[in-house]
Image (cartoon, rainbow, N blue to C red; front, side, top):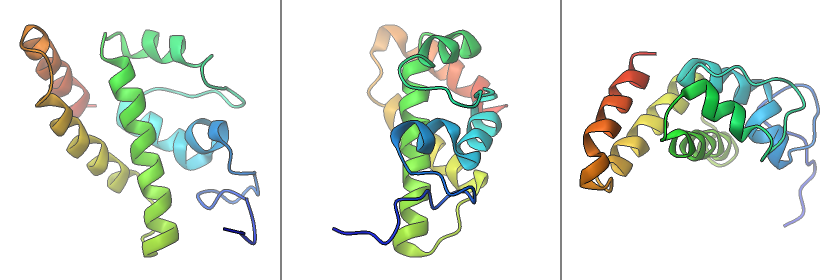
Length: 126
């Protein structure tokens, strides 16, 4: 597929839509990290160097679940804007995040289930 532009559709600063921009440095992504997980992403951060920072900020053994699901939620918001014309916002990203988190909770090992559900309740209160 040939696109007219490779600029990020979620922000207005004409940045190329690459992995680090889309999931970390885009203004929309930064707002989602702050609103959903209360993680302040610094500009020009990259994967995988940001992962220890996210782990320390969340202080949970489930930090990778949160990271993956938030990236998925941002990706979903991007695709909804491109393919459905649905304007991206933090509330819709949050809904996708917690919907997917509930599905993940069904697959948690019994030995970690109580901790996972407690963690889930804590982040829902952010």
